[in-house]
Length: 125
Image (tube, rainbow, N blue to C red; front, side, top):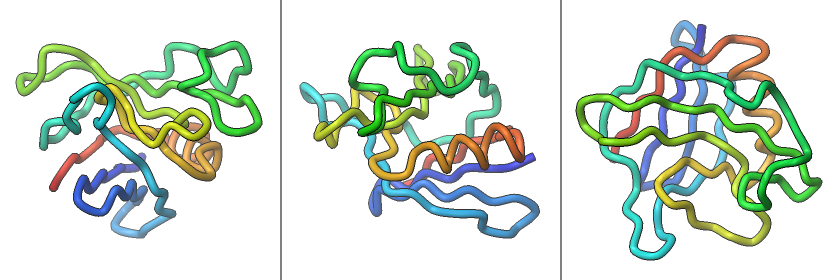
């Protein structure tokens, strides 16, 4: 089981397992139409509602090759809605409150979901 940490100030998503860093990715959160980044906190319910890597998702969820995934992070006491970790669509650089991975997003999905089963997301400044 793995843990992802998103650091807002550096726009970095780090994946670790048993204290060992498995990888890091540049990612964005917020910035679209005055949307703020995610609230700081620990989120523990993560699912894969679209069932893997797909090509039929809206452009905002796709990497440059058209691949998409959508790891949903459920609501908790600090926010009134869920959000997701997904590829940041081509040339966007902003999200509506999700975490959008800007480069090599599929490698995050393969490690975080297929190999180690992501169980916790920590968002910090």
